[in-house]
Length: 465
Ligand SMILES: [Mn+2]
Image (tube, rainbow, N blue to C red; front, side, top):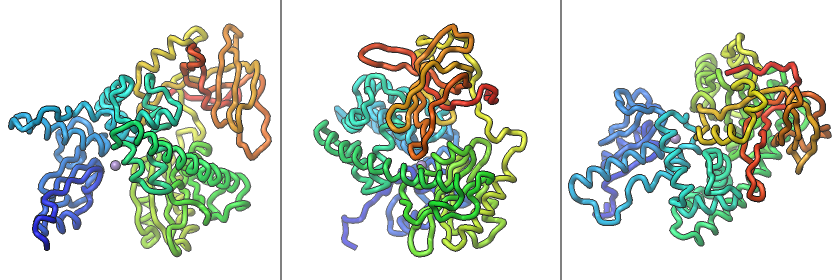
């Protein structure tokens, strides 16, 4: 071995806690290993010199919900403090707070629960981004997404910045996203953000096609997609597969179909000869990794590999076993479902009085964030009369609605209301809306807008959560 060319230290981020063999090999070569991770450890911990992970037994850290980026942040902060104590900090060295823009982004994009600790990290990062103290890459991505940096919310990180960064890894080369975040100048960042924006458009087109095929298969059983027999609307757990599907976006498709069917969904893509990769998304109350655990225990030899957490999981499977898996998954989901929970129940925070549906309420709710994973933005339900309704673009629905007693009227919009492949009339008459309050900025004016998540019959039950 050439002297001087060996690394003396390996630092892992967001992985390593299960790399027992890898860490042993590095140590055998005389390389020190610092594992920083947030994933749950297995029965055996790697023999690293140091492990930093809030989820190892005996951890005293107040939050177990940190994302990988959050763990790295605290390691850097501790290192900085130690160097300070030793008087080894050079003038102009960055303070840890300067990385909070990236910590906020990674925390939101990784979909970890926004517990108190994570909400502090995200909130501080958002404040810095609003003040312009962020990497050029975040500014550039926000510009392509047409989101205002000055009023950025956690949802903008989750729905505008995150998907553009991830699109590169799903379709092309994930280093484009990393280079965009590391870019020192706005010129470089903008060029890379343009490429990411383009990849995101491609990702969306692929995802929309796959999603339409999956929905058609669910509706019409075995028409457009060669599927397992476990796709009927009566299934508790749904499995979908098409040979033309792209591995990089099956998770997104599973998520969309899950939202529409409100039950756990696995979407599969081919991952090599005779091999499928599946990505699953679940609904509240059904721990999908535990479901897979029970499927694997009851059917030895069925699953090659699987992993995940309560709401999302992945697995690999021999293609000829897909039907077997689909049946076992459906049966296990049915056993796991709480019969006391209405399958189609939508939970809200209740009804608002006519005067509470106001711009001031929307501002107050916005200030109460960041909202996100495991800390959902408040959502309300109520009966409204539709005064006018029209389609905007391919899929969206624009409404002008009055409260049931006709006291007040509001602008409302329901995104992705229409299925572009089906003729569908806009809703009319009295309906029950499940909605959130939004501040809509248009030509310098701020107005209240209801963001409608569900348009339901008046007598539909929407339970208070
Ligand atoms: Mn992670």
